[in-house]
Image (cartoon, rainbow, N blue to C red; front, side):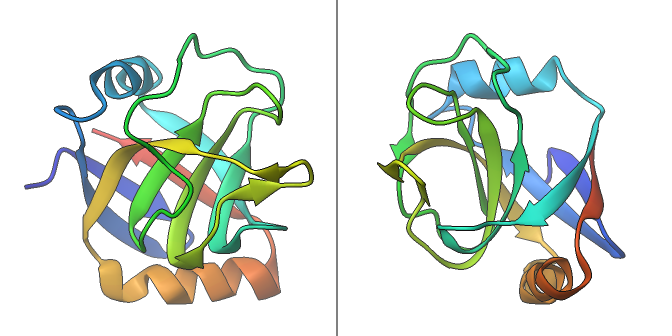
Length: 136
């Protein structure tokens, strides 16, 4: 099932919202759609790309949180000891920042285009920031 299309670099992915496990985060993210930004490669977390959001307060707390998102899982860190951010895992991840391990809310899972995740991650690592658009 696909709830949302995500375009990142030259790739298009289908994803589903994790409504049952993460209803508040899903609802909040839906208010931001369509959401356009750039992703960059992570510094501490492993094989992932992220969108740094600084001090943005999304009004969220922890729900369905994890430090180890699987490839294709998208999490949002609501802020606190590190900056607010969105992270897209494409390989092995231990979600962290310069202050240590973090946990983020797993609110989206890519269901289509998984075969292109590693290519997107490597492109972001070697070529720099890539445009990402979350649409409906």
